[in-house]
Image 1: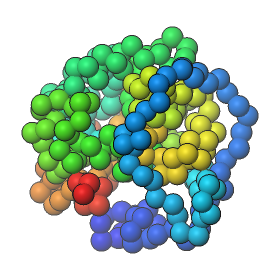
Image 2: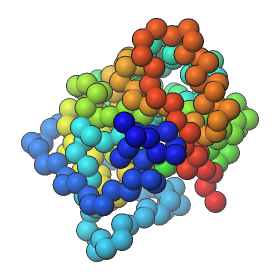
Image 3: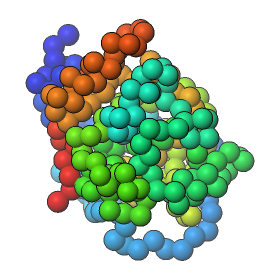
Image 4: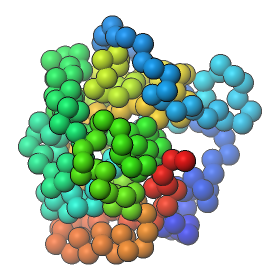
Length: 263
């Protein structure tokens, strides 16, 4: 199969193979949701979203079917080797002890107490973003100055991370979608209906930069289709990590646009 200059298979790179037409949104039966009352969030918390050319104001952009949607999990390279050796991504409540924890203690505490609506808590899940420019990931690659992040996170640059990419259909059942930061008090959770939840969230967040897809842990490494890094030295480093890993390795690609700091 042909590859683009960034290492993606043909058709997978949004730069070399831009999508020419949006795919229709999925409409399915409603599932349980939980909405907690909360205070209005300051307007400065979320950056302005971009509207696709030709889309009328107030009209939600159409989104790909959830099963084919790419989802993103960013992790420091120093933690990646443990993930590869374990053969899975683990939730914090499931025993994950990262070599370098980029989350602030308060953020960990909030996620440990945030109920998704059925008695489970956010830290029992492995989080994936619905956009390569998710708000929290942009914060990390732009210096991690926000209170969500640890001092260790502020010592890292964008090139010190890898982005693990999975496709919605490969993440199994029992997914929970948070329409905003999963630890925030006014976030709404939707259980077992990610297609409807993502389509609904796109009405107010067209780029889905605030959406989290929570996957019951652990997530097998086989669900990861590719690993993106910022430069060639990082790709060489990741490939060396696979020397001690059994089984087929995901594709490792260099894709700088996902690692650019916000201006």
